[in-house]
Length: 168
Length: 392
Image 1 (cartoon, helix red, strand yellow):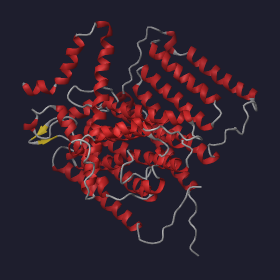
Image 2: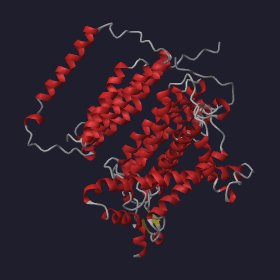
Image 3: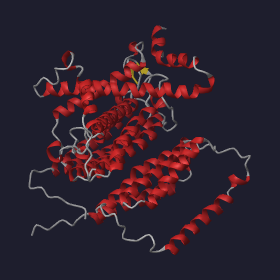
Image 4: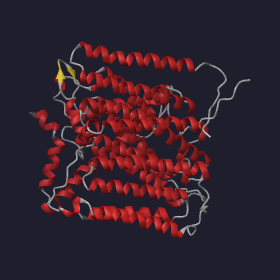
């Protein structure tokens, strides 16, 4: 598992994430974030989780990164190199949040079943199995989520749309 | 026998070459022998297509097209390549140099990746992924970012406008593109491109089992090709380039070889998406008639690809460019509902027993939806003063 590919991909992901934090231009940060997303997606592919990896690419690089870029351009013009919030504004809060998230993730990883039973074979989740499980066992949550997302989409379109002027 | 050997000639050639390399480097050589032909064949096809396109457009517009370089202008791409190689590479002073430099490279890398999952012939695929179709779309999504990078880094209003148009258009048309592919995935029961082609390789009577020969498949294929035209920014959906309004869109500030790279990336994208259309709807490498199966599979793939390219050129020479609001209306008010109906129709086809019933039911779904949606679009397009509604 710890192959050369893994280290290259991990390096790409980390460099992308660090660049996303440290670069000055907001659009640069967004692009670096897209690199980090892509690195994560290829890491999943490297681990054999095809669906997860490709969905990560499709959703995060294809949709979320484009959305972030659009939001930056539509709200701030993208040319302003000086961030409104200086990096030293809320250092304690930032450190606290980061530590808390890291602690929770570390706790979850160290208490997971996979680590304590190394003899267990890695589960092979094919796309067919994923689909069958979603459509058979979890069909109600899936439908509820679909309905909610559709409602959110329609709501967003209505909120964004300017009211039609009356001809009078 | 001869036909079968000829069919597998490239596969056998690869194994023969592999036999001569030492065992230690065999995986690397195998990868190289898979990738290099793709990197060679499709750019050559691109060169041929530029001649074909300029000749074809010339024919449609009552002029000659290129006819000076070589025999009937056949060497024109060589001259073009030399010209773009020797041209000065101009980068605007205010441009964002790194992003400006990276954009064409990202676009080109992303344009080559989808070929990994296209079955060009029997046993001729670079990576037989379990989720080949998904891979194709995941990679396609990245090209939006490269277009944005090009448009934004040029620091030019026109190129930013072009990039925004391109991204908006690509996102909008990705929805019907994906949905019409979903119909095929449902019918084939697999996301693997190889398996989808194998499902279509049989014959009943003289008719092949291609999905385009079913009612939902026909509608799906047309939707897919329209969305593919929009996705590759080709006329009549070439607003992102829009020579008459925004000059050349997102690659206005690129010159010399970088411009040629954009050009190449765009055409490679068009071939790749046509290849996916062939794989999903036109039976991939399978022969159209049972007595033609002796012709090698890869010839069929490239024949179909050339057919679709000629279709693209024909459409480009025939239809005028759409307006932005027409483009968006068409995507969201006609293509999207129509694609949803195609998915439902494919589901009905899958679960009804074979016979006349499922033909009638499937056709009825498509026909009724088409009539209603087309009428809806028609009545809304009354000729009057246009009113626009903007998002705030």
